[in-house]
Length: 287
Image (cartoon, rainbow, N blue to C red; front, side, top):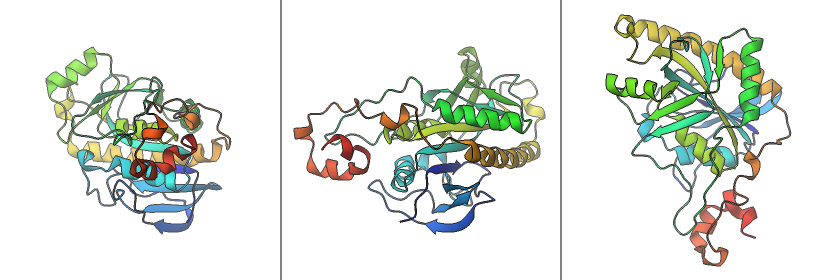
């Protein structure tokens, strides 16, 4: 099977990654069902990468319908050690302007219908999630933004809402009163599952609009938002190429050993079927 070390997850507007050479399309099956689409494998800036369209090419899958477990498991199966995830977000702060990039380092979960763990069925594990993104990937993305002269806001909190409807005005104002920075619908589950899979993860959040709290919200047209999204996608592709080129080969962060002390269950009592299902993730810890 073809392999990759860096995974790229494309969100709204980013359904392909120009510049990938020696392209190969791979469809995978996983114990958790089908991923959102085929993985596009190849070489980008001299590195082996795997690209996945989170919503499927053509944007067929809503945020609540995404099979997050299959997507992350598939990247793990391909050998991916780091994920750069691209996500369109609304701004909850005046200074986070449309066309800016954000690199949130915290998440707040406001979803209700999603599975955010690989574990269960007789195997309990509790990962540390106080720092939910990889500092190495965040810093590399931040440097890439700076090198390209793009406005970027490292740090802050991403509110992950259920969707597919956007916030009510009351919700938007509540999140602002809590000190949140951006709002989106996808990154939280990816971050948790990537940590359980011991994959480094960070979100490149593309600010496309102010959430409905902003007094000029009604003056923003769909055409403007789509224009911002298109231009943001072009910028994100440039950032990704620079970041892929600059990411260190060796991992020195804690992401790579997130499960080392997370498994609580008595090894002798873990069902054989569960061991088999999760062998890719936990096999080294159950020998």
